[in-house]
Image (cartoon, rainbow, N blue to C red; front, side, top):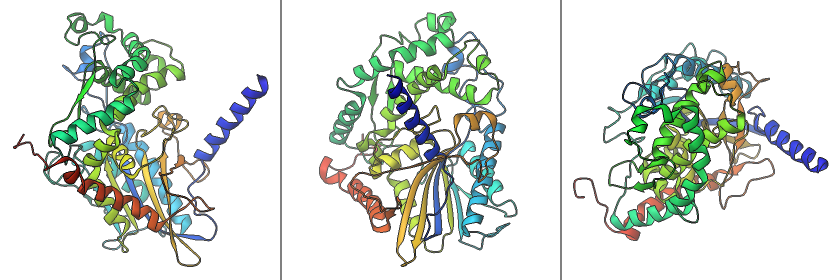
Length: 435
């Protein structure tokens, strides 16, 4: 038994060390281009007066340095740290010179028109290129029809909705949402205990039903974001606020309203949020419809020979949808409470050229660990953020862990073609007006 525990510890430590390996081109390769899809950094939750988290606890939430859903000052500081790290890495690799000021078209910063997304892009640019007057692109407002990051169904028909809901139920478990609810029951109970939900007059009134007994499910409508209902949705909103409060506040006991929680218990709380996100956006058939415009935009960036660096910023569901559409294999990120799309995570595509002139890609997630996030740790080449290399179904890597350019672009092309075939599979697309 002792030998088994030592082996498990050694494996876990090895995974952590692998994940924290600094970004670096393998020997014999030259870095040519970097394309990033980022999640916004630390934001304030929806915990203002009248919100679900505010109603479901007798306690007062943290005094946030940003308005509801906006980037906090700590989120800005974290993003500057990440930009500074990328600056030193890109300088070391020779992709950019010191004090880089890009020529027209060499660099692109693009964000969803949400304060937390635009601000994240600007903070990153400040850290990476402090002397450049960086312009962050964004389209209209967040409800603009050209908003490619809006997480709505870009294809819909009744037949598609039936198949997509079946797909969601498959990932929920053997008995669909009943299985997911059973798996999350202890986590939801922990969330309720931490915020002392029993002491909330609103919860006592029955407005939110019984979070431990009522059913959950999903509704799909044309041109709208998938909508989960029931206890999983309600518990997610409270778990999200708790997680953000834990990242933001120096005292973890105060962040848990006086409860002394273990790391395992914090992970249990965050698992409620992660499961909600996976059920809402992560099913392959759902992701294919939601992420299509972002997949197209990233594909264009990867093929832009004049682009040196590209940074797009949206949400965790954006990254989740793109990865699901591309056929990412299952993964669990180490040293973070959020094991799929942590706060501020970057999906990084590095285009590398070998000595024979062939192009290869390194695809990874780069993120600040839970402790780096809580401490706003300085990120350097000696103390890098976490990095986790991704694998994709049906795609082999070479001996240096890289994906051939044709194979990576083929994943994007396959996802775009699969979206275009939805009409043939499920009938003519319905719009909100026609529904």
